[in-house]
Amino acid sequence: MVSDVVVVGSANVDLLLEVPRHPAPGETLLGGGGASVPGGKGANQAVAAALSGARTAFVGAVGDDAGADVALRGLRRAGVDIDAVAHVPGPTGLAVVTVADSGENTIVVVPGANAAGDVTAVEGASDRIRTASVCVLQLEVALEAVERAARLAHDGGCRVVLNAAPAASVPLATLRLADPLVVNEHEAAIVLAGALEDVGSVPEGAAGRIEPAAPGESLDAAPDLVAQATGTARALRGLGVRSVVVTLGGRGSVGVEPDGAWHVPARIVEAVDTTGAGDAFVGALAAGLASGSDLRAAAEHATRFAAASVRSRGAQDSYPDPGEQLP
Image (cartoon, rainbow, N blue to C red):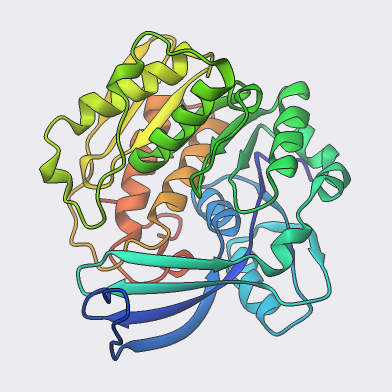
């Protein structure tokens, strides 16, 4: 089956813990929860794309343990093609997600079987990647695999959506294949710094780049965050990245592309759990692009889809079903 969207990335079991607040270093808190649910940035994005109406395939790996069924459950339910998922010896990837009463979360990821998502696995899925309309990539699998998948997709005429998360430096040659590069405000600073090291100079507009916020800092503490994000995106565009989207949580998102810059405000909802909201945005964005929407229109839909996802707990389990009213 030729897919609208192919996602190359991670599949995990998310272990969900609930705490009144996040503990300080060395502190022990009593918590609740303990449920194991499907997760992983790649799988989350694939589910979001499928629930947004795109024919979606997922390329990744799970282990030979009981966690494999959990990790694949949401993909199966959403109708994602998982024929290119490898089953390898060892444990399935695990993410320990701690959610505070405020809705904010911390996540620790143990890659497990996702380490098998290497260049060889990407080559084995090359036909799926080349023939899709949009290829979605993130950084929970080997960077070499991301680089190869981006090149295969680009050379095959498939649009590359690169979500540079978890935050890491990415070679400028790979960033230049992305259309768009999607980062949050913290990842933006790290990706830009790495790109500047690649070229050894500062392009016009780089002075507006975002410095990472302190842990727990409110977006309200940075009234010019939208302007800073736009400056960062322009700096990345100045380095040859085709288009850039910077997500800003409660401030929405900004985008910079050849035709100019824009800002999509966030939808106002009562947040219960923000786990997987960024992935919801990326997957829905990819589905919009695959359907023929321009980048801003796709971001507007993705903003509504992601807003719906924070109204209940979990990642994939919180994503709105097709036809569900979006904020």
